[in-house]
Structures are given as structure tokens and as C-alpha cells.
Image (cartoon, rainbow, N blue to C red):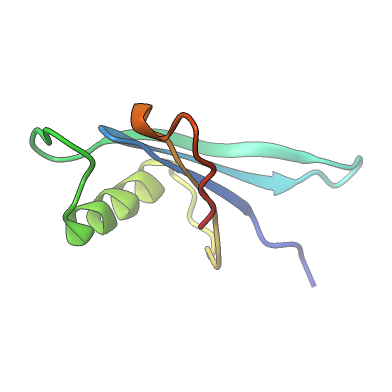
Length: 90
């Protein structure tokens, strides 16, 4: 059974960053096979509060990486200037 890709998403206040990496075959670790930085559609004055807009932007960020394999789960971080003293896990 092959190891699934490692997917990292950074949900920011203005855009979503995405990196997809696959395990290396000859050494421990991963190599990046795709990445993207996708802004939210329209201008948002505060943290995105529309879950559908966030979901669409996540889908666009994943598609923009160019990775065509199966994606099962992801590591997610949230970044926002107001969160500087908080730790968020999803």
C-alpha cells in the first residue's frame, strides 16, 4: 500500500496556501509535487465568514497545484493577524 500525499492548507484572511508533497522513495522525507496561493473571490473586509466561499477557494487551491492523484485528508493551519496569540488546530 502506498503512502498518501501530504496536503497542507493555510487558511488566511485574504488567501489560501496549499502544498502537496509525496514521500521520497529512496530516503525519509517528502518532495513537493504541487503548490498554490489562491485569493478569495472579491474583497473581504474581515475574516472570511462564508463557508461556501472558503470551500470553493480550497477546491481552487487544490486544483491549482496541478496534482491529479487522490486526496484523502489534509493538515490545516489558520493564519490571521488577530490570531497571533492563539494556536488553532483543525
